[in-house]
Every structure is written in structure tokens, then in C-alpha cells.
Image 1: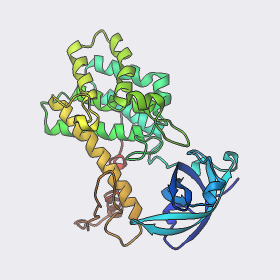
Image 2 (image 1 turned 180 degrees about the vertical axis):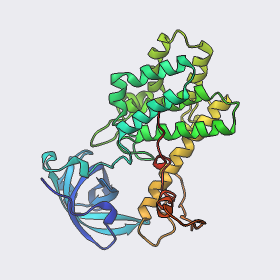
Image 3 (image 1 turned 135 degrees about the vertical axis):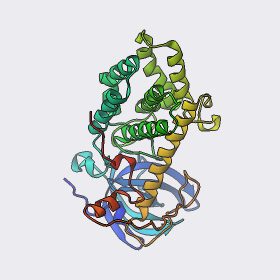
Image 4 (image 1 turned 30 degrees about the vertical axis):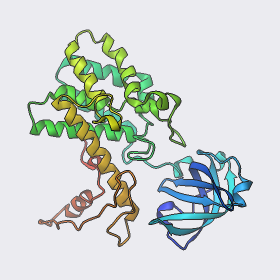
Length: 349
């Protein structure tokens, strides 16, 4: 069994690296000197771009995401990011590595996240038809099997095992917090919609060593896939008012907000606006947390350019705590800029 010696988070420009990585992506290109590979190397600490130039590239005509490779290369800065240029590369059998060392970890175990979502339904859903609907959906064996390993996205946010459940729970909690500020909102349908809005991602994206779009994910998208899974349960929910079902469907299909962002319909109720913004807030905060993680342990205040946010992100000086005492250090750690909503105490039944 090969043991990791160097993790991506510890690689700095100027280092010569020799270790084993998972190929998260592999694309070919053509330069004046011949074909080359653009790779994305991955381990449990993160991802890093790598280049394989000719003639070495021609010795490996069939690289693909999901393969393990042992490489040697020089790390250097390129467009404000550390990148490897490889001079050695060899495929490594999967039975010689521990896959856990190459997959990004979930901050909280997926089973715990799912249990908290179920507890949230029991606490908050006082309308019996809504509670019954969610109990049946979350109790479905196929749905549970899909949800537990599902990622929240391919690369942008929550791109790790358990990421979909983490994102779902954070969006639900954000919606409930906003309901406290705006009590005229329908808290019940909004919570159900928050828990179901991205259900289709469990079928849109594959789980395992690589995360990529499935055929049905590319052809239909997660909104359509999620509605298809929910439709069967809604058809059997005979005690649920059809008007409530209609509103729920609108919330799900409008949660991307605008047509250019993939929404089949734009939000047309207060609850639909709340769900859209709660979804957007959590995605942005998780992306920023990942950006801060890239500069953790350095003296840098600015992150590398964030393509999906179309900007650099600044890490400001934080206001010092006003009251020192027992637990002050723990509170300070919990309030670091990259802390997630998920790190707050989970509720109980």
C-alpha cells in the first residue's frame, strides 16, 4: 500500500514533488512542440493543476479522470496559482492506494447530516401532510443511498462527499432564520422546498473517485431530475392541498432565480425569492471558505482569482473579541472567516 508523503495543501513554488495523486481531470491540447496534457491532480487536501508536455505526453495517450498516477514535477506559480510541470508520470493500480487519502473529506459525516435533516422535519413541520411527505421521501431506500455520498456540485461549491446534504441543511437553516425575520412567509412549504430543491443532484452527478455529470444529468439537469423523483410521492399525498403542491413545484423550479442561471421560471412568490437567495448565499459562502483555505497559513490577505466569483477575495482583519474568559479561544476559532454554518451546534429532537 502506497502512503502519501506530500499533500497538495503543503506544496509551494520551487519544490520538486514526487508522490501519488488522483486524476480529477485530464484534457489534451496541442502546442507548437506537440500534444500536451492539462491535468488536475487531487488528494484529500485539495486540487492542483499540472502540465505534461511533449515528448512525455506522447507516452501516455489515454489518461482519464479516476486514475491514480505517481508523478514527479516542479511546482511554480502560474497566474497566481501553484502548478506542477511533470517530468515523470506512471499509472498506479487502485489496489495500491487508500482512496480516502485522495477524496476531500466532509466536515460532518453524511449520516449525521441526514439524521439532522430528519430531526429538523420532526421539529418544524407541524402540518401533517408535509411531515408525512418528507418522512416518506427521506425514508426511501434509493433516495437515501443516493443522498449520502452525493456532492453539492462538480467543482464550484460543496464538491465533496456529503456536500449535497451539507448544502441542503444550510439552505434550510437559512430559510428558517429568514422566516423569523419575515413571519408572513409560509415557513412549512419553504422548509420542504429547501430540503428538496437540489434533490436531483444526487442523480445529476456521479459519486465515487470522480465527480462528473451523468447522461441524465447532462440531458435533463438536476431541477427536472428532482421533480421526477418527487412527483411519485406527491401523487400519493392525497391529503396535501393541490395548491400547496403547485407552490412547492414553483419553488423548486425557480430556485436558480433567473433564466440565464438555468431557472425554468423566475421566482414569483416571496418564498421563491427567499429560497433563491438562501441557495445563492450558501453556495457563495462555501466557495469563499474554500478560497480562504487556499491562503491559510500564509501572510496573504488576497486569495487567488476565483473564476466562479469573477474576482479576487480579500480576507479582512477581524474585530477582536470584547470579552475574554473560558471558552473565548474556542469561540474565536468557530468565528474564523472560513467557518461554515454547519459548525454551529446541531439541534436536538
